[in-house]
Each structure stands twice: as structure tokens, then as C-alpha cells.
Length: 129
Image (cartoon, rainbow, N blue to C red; front, top):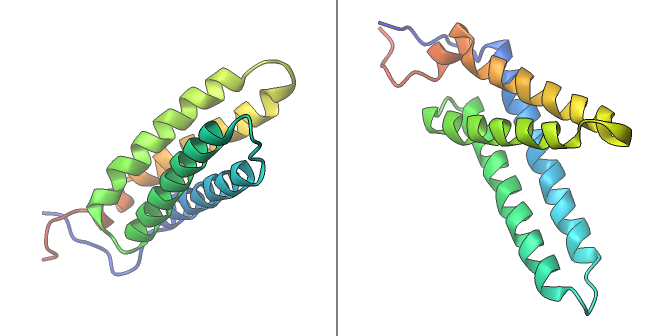
């Protein structure tokens, strides 16, 4: 049986914090997309803004849930990091290599933070003994 620790483990806090930063960046991108609406691309700007605002809000909610030990939050965060690794792969080479490396590094740190044994124990649905 797994015993849930009293305090959130550091890797889980790091993973949740980086996830929150990702959510804030996506919300910022949604705002910038809204600010750049022009008459010839209204539909694209609106749908892009709604998508990234929803994606960012989901990541912020999942980050909050991770800090409150809600096990459901692990799945959307893992999915987001896997998507982020694919995005990083597409940015490799040329002038965007730094962006690719930073994006991939953040995704890997979050994934490791979620899957270390102390984080798994903290997010376990089993009742403490």
C-alpha cells in the first residue's frame, strides 16, 4: 500500500509550476492573437484565440489540481507534454533550434517530475494508512 506524504514532493511542485507557466504562455498567445485581428482573418484569429485560451485554461486548472493532489490532472498534463515534444521536434534546425531545445527540456522536466515515485505516491488515489 502506498502512503501519501504530508507535503507535496519537490518534483511534483516543479512539474505543476512549469505546467502553470505553459498555461500562462498559452493564454498570453491567445490575447496576442485577439489583438492582431484584421478584417481578412477574423475567423482564424477568433478560433485560434479560443483554442489557445481553452488549452491554457486547462493547463492552469491541471497545474492547480496537481498541487492539490488530484490524480485526474496527470493525464492532461502528460498529453500536453507529449504534444509539446512533437512541437519541439518540428522547431528543430535553423533559427528556431533554441526554441526547440527549451520546449523539449521543459516537457521532459515536467514528465520526469510527474513520474518520479514520490509524485506518483502523492497523486495516488489510495487512502493513507
